[in-house]
Length: 194
Image (cartoon, rainbow, N blue to C red):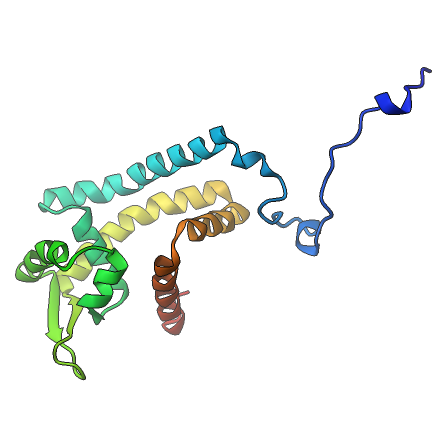
């Protein structure tokens, strides 16, 4: 049996001490292993976002195209459907677009019977938006198409990956987007959806 000199003996990789979550099999906190921050990994993340978004939106895009609509219409349907009674100002804040850009999308949607607009009860200058039955049916159809894509991905990835995905997506959001998401989550919780 040959004995290797102490300096030549391979060392096990250095690891950070485990916290209680990691010891139970949970994910390590971000930053423990920084190999995922290499240039090629960040480029891959960008590729994944581009391709994932393309395929996530493809089915809904086809439905919308048949109706002469696009992604801007989808965003309006989604957020008005998630927050019935949302003000035009709140929707502008969520979408981060100009009033003129929203008008180009919203005006035809109101005229075609997808969205209703009524004055606010307290402040009559406010315009409160809600989906009509026709708008709700279209929003549901778009959601169901995208739900299948997300469900398949979630099933393949598993619960730990889903939580990691949520953390990454929140990390990509700025403060305004996080605030808007928090309002949606709070509303869903009040309705018992979350």
